[in-house]
Image (cartoon, rainbow, N blue to C red; front, top):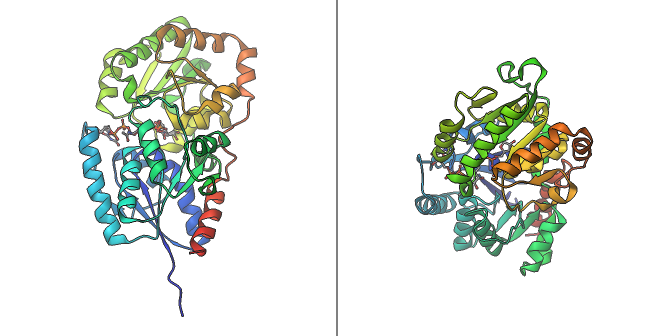
Length: 371
Ligand code: UD1
Ligand code: UDP
């Protein structure tokens, strides 16, 4: 009697989700104990396509959800219906999603309604402030209540889940799959020549896209960048996130400023090359906080709180918030004080060792074979 191969459906909606599920998809397909199907919700369009292209993955289903300037409520309702229809036709044995976006929250809810097991990758991150990051903190809490398997990147994230009452037998510490992706991408591209700093100047890499930073906070960040290029002979490379709230403010405040290069989002291997080339990184991104320690780069986190406190404790990330003076003074300290810089640059990466996808695949194989 032949046994039906289980099907795992893996969703990705935005750039970081695709980066973080790509190495797992590749390993699951190599191991071949289940059929893997990729569901792109396309909550992001160009950014998602960029990543799938690089990892040589083609979505099996594409919901093409993104609309310019989408609101959270309309995005949520469109995603919930569309993911539910997909579950109805695909009938997967297990669904996986990564992170804390609206794609992940709606996928977990749609699975719960249909009683389909849901596995959450990068589970257990918390700030314990429901408005920060918004809406991601509440997305994470909802997903942890709905999920069946929880792949926590660190022991701290596992402890967060267990403290909230999640059954500890369903929580596994695996490391973060972003490090698997980073190690795979590193060295596959060089920083484009046009983006190299002139005359041996040091490069400062900037990204910012969080909703909490829209408006005044992002203006403060831009003002700090402007102060920095005036104070020191550095060059800023700033790949601008396509969210219209980000594009408008950034262009208004920084376009044409000498020493500042505003560029479209870089594809993943070029962005990794930019991180490697950078002396210092300023960001409000989650993924970049996790990647930078593997490359020995200090990160100034443009947020007041982080769900990734391991990097702060380990000394690789410094919380400066979206505060003009704090950003400038910490950046100058790191630019001017080689001893302080070297100490941070030598710290090890608390988020992973490049084998998280292997660990997740091992667990999934045991769970699915036991059914
Ligand atoms: C989303 C996630 C956030 C994640 C971020 C990663 C939610 C609520 N937010 O934020 O958690 O950190 O992605 O980048 O899930 N846009 C494009 N092209 C793209 C991508 C975005 O034009 O490829 C523009 C569109 O106008 C879109 C807008 O950006 O409506 C906002 O996209 P959305 O996914 O709602 O929010 P992000 O700010 O990207
Ligand atoms: N990234 C990229 N190109 C860019 C900026 C970022 O490939 O121009 C990568 C980065 O290396 C990280 C991920 O995108 O892996 C982070 O995505 P983002 O900052 O959009 O989301 P977050 O991590 O904050 O959810």
